[in-house]
Length: 185
Image (cartoon, rainbow, N blue to C red; front, side):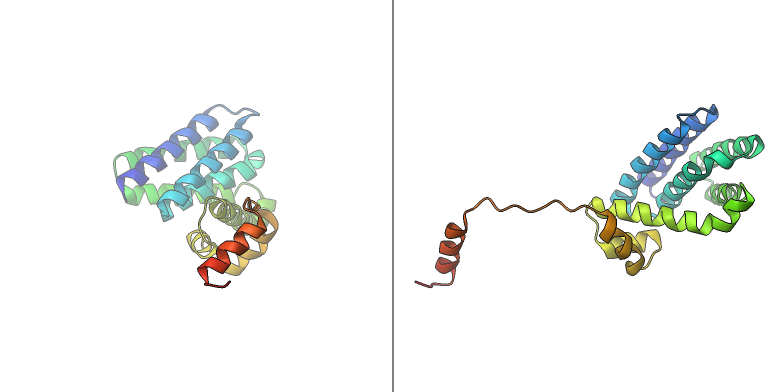
């Protein structure tokens, strides 16, 4: 793992722990902001470990209301363990922590178990669309998020807002330039 990526993940883990340490109403908005921040790192580094953390944070944000107090405590403890293991560069243990975190999110509620794949797909699509907004191509964004181009295209066509192009040079001047370029009198 690249050192810059490791530092970004450590930052994301620290912020997530800080947000979740004390259960508050504002946690949902803060997790959403952190998830949006993390997607900037994914666009910059295009790293699978960053993608996992981003999807994990987004998933926690989406299902935080269904956690029991025990699950909530277990998630915070597992996040702290993941942070410590990553800090010590013990990647095997860190990967086990991340796997366990996804299991905890998945086991949050029977209803969530049924729809967890939908939550994960929605997280990938939302974050893939955010990558598009940051200038990546549909192929790059879909590949990074583990989606097909088609999956992302359908959603991106409805969601992504492209800046309208407006021409500031009058048409007559553009035509004159075109005639000069092609040597037309």
